[in-house]
Amino acid sequence: MTGAADIPRRRFDTLVIGAGGGGLRAALQLSQDEATVAVVSKVFPTRSHTVAAQGGMNAALGNVVPDNWHWHMYDTVKGSDYLGDQDAIEYMCRAAARLVVEMEHAGVPFSRLENGKIYQRPFGGQSQNFGGAQASRTCAAADRTGHAILHALYQQNLRAQTHFFDEFFAIDLIKDDEGHILGALVLEIETGEPLVIEAKTTLLATGGVGQLFRNNTNARINTGDGMGMALRAGIPLEDMEFFQFHPTGIAGKGMLITEGGRGEGGYLVNKDGARFMERYAPKAKDLASRDVVSRAIATEVREGRGCGSGGDYVLLDLTHLGAEVVKKRLPGIREMCLTFLHLDPIDKPIPVFPTAHYTMGGVPTNRYGEVVTLGEDGSEEAVPGLYAAGECACVSVHGANRLGGNSLLDIVVFGRAAGNRIIDYLKSHRYHRPLPLSGVEQAVTRLQRWEQVGEGESVGALKAELQRTMEHYCGVFRTEEVLAEGLKKVQELEQRLAHARLKDHSKVFNTARIEALELENLMDVALATVSSALARQESRGAHTRIDHAERDDEHWLKHSLYFKGGRLDYKPVRLQPLTVESFPPKPRVY
Ligand SMILES: Cc1cc2nc3c(=O)[nH]c(=O)nc-3n(C[C@H](O)[C@H](O)[C@H](O)COP(=O)(O)OP(=O)(O)OC[C@H]3O[C@@H](n4cnc5c(N)ncnc54)[C@H](O)[C@@H]3O)c2cc1C
Image (cartoon, rainbow, N blue to C red; front, side, top):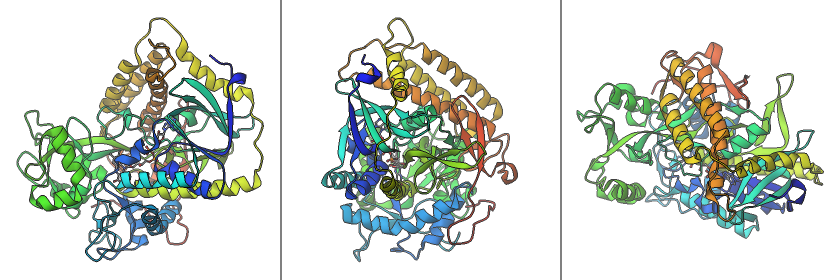
């Protein structure tokens, strides 16, 4: 293995780690400004998880029913169970319409209404006039919106001459003694050779961490690598206890059936054929917020009203929509049902159960995409040279529960914002800072650890055990006892991981080595998630504590910050928007 001094180096103004919608939108902003930009991705860019997004992107265009950004802001604050930062939420909702138009001009073929305007479907948690009638705010390209956005952004980046490092795996950030982030050590997966990418600014855009749980909607690559890198660089993770379980995953398999299914008029029924959402959310019914619908499904199953021989799922019924609507608006999910369930949703309802879907928490940033940590006096401080955007970041616009359609919006809004902030920074920071070898050595040590030979447990088995443990001990419903047990189990797994060994030490396309590095990240993020969940003694958004069933604004209206090693700290929620009045916390009913 090469020593730190011998590793080849490349230099750029900006290193973007991750080529999903968040990373690519930021890279585009920078390349168009003639900064030199390297985008590193562990898979070919258009295979990033953004490609799988189905339902759409929110913006108050008002093409179907009246709408405006202020109502969108209200819904997002309420959806977040008041944990979202209202300055960032205002910024995002105001920018939304402009960014949908921008995406359209970049090449996204949005579905159309008869009058030629962009089609918008109703989604969960959307209302007109601050909690009134259902809104229709989600701009969709059929049920393949993420696919269209990612491909458009990739092509625009090629045109702007962004430099891509496809199938390179980022191992760790490089930091100097003064705390500046100076790039990262990466591994070329094809050759197994390391490379140092030096940069004046580095953006984390590595996506979410759905692979924490056994049943999930996420791609295999969503292992929280950027979050692990941040923790190891001394940066905390924010609000990790809030993990979104999507109500309608294919039962037993986890793949996603978009909320668009219910948006188009589908509904949920239990084994008695009853539309049970009427009991849980009398007004919004099947289009209540995701946390509400997931809990309702889990409750139906627990109380013996589930379907099938095991009674362990409910049914999503689309049969009354008619073949034409399903084929035109939901072709992707029909195809998925035909392939994986041998069932046509035009004729038969789909078996569904909540499945791990979205990471509300992440690397703390402000609304400019700058990564922030707590200074010694407890105030917020930017980490020089480091930015984050997309699902790996916590701005926080989603608070304790994200609304469907707000993430595709988040990634383009804050990808762009981070790009702009970096452009400003580069104007006054024209030279690279010297790169200390000690910063590289730490990352090299992490890589070399996997070269140890001898007997040890397999990475694959440990990963499966971690995913089962998280599902069992940190799922939809939580208690102190179960979480404490879960934390102990994850800590034991962490110990065992330290003694795991690779059987295959070859260099070329050694995916076993990549999986080992990913599992280290998953383990760090699992510890952050369970520890933050154990500490938070209230129920808010997606975090449901049976032993603390109420939201407790007096003690818990604050963001959690988890530091590697287990220390927890907290910071206040930003309740003050930019120009409008604050939405104060209220009981949340749908
Ligand atoms: C099935 C599904 C459907 C969804 N539908 C919707 C929807 O309809 N509307 C909506 O708003 N949201 C939806 N979401 C959520 C939304 O799609 C995601 O939150 C968003 O696309 C994440 O984008 P991103 O750019 O942050 O990350 P991703 O698209 O996940 O990209 C992450 C990138 O990081 C790279 N990477 C990660 N680790 C490393 C490493 N160590 N080294 C190098 N590269 C690395 C990957 O290669 C990839 O390029 C959906 C999510 C899923 C899973």
